[in-house]
Length: 154
Image (cartoon, rainbow, N blue to C red; front, top):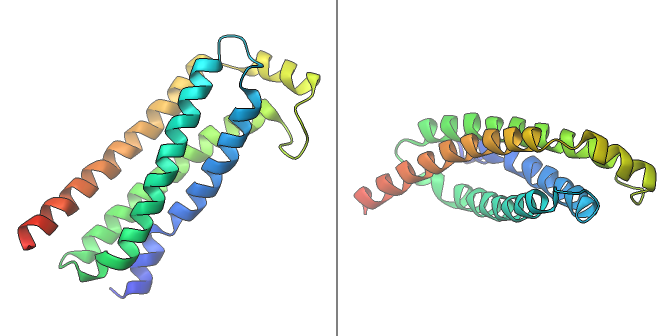
């Protein structure tokens, strides 16, 4: 498998990074405006920021190191599937946040805050959080397998 297809396998992380950025911005706009949601919003912002940093590092690592792996096609397939799952989970969360904040280009108005209060569901946010965590667990397992393989080759 050539290096370009390897890079393409994890290029989905670029789309995830952009989605995370928009979602964090939307959540930050809601913080302090929804009763009982502040802790969840703070935790989501922190977690999404960490995920964004980690995915950026993974993307860089894959770009420069995975081509040397003896099982690169399996790794690429694993990264593709995992990134697709992360993308789907992140897109679902982003859609939920977008429905809460409305048009992200406009400042939050009283109407959008009222709509967000009406639509906010702690259960939905926990469901999104759980789906995202499941995908991250798979990614973590894949990276641990890669780390184990690299250590045995060294």
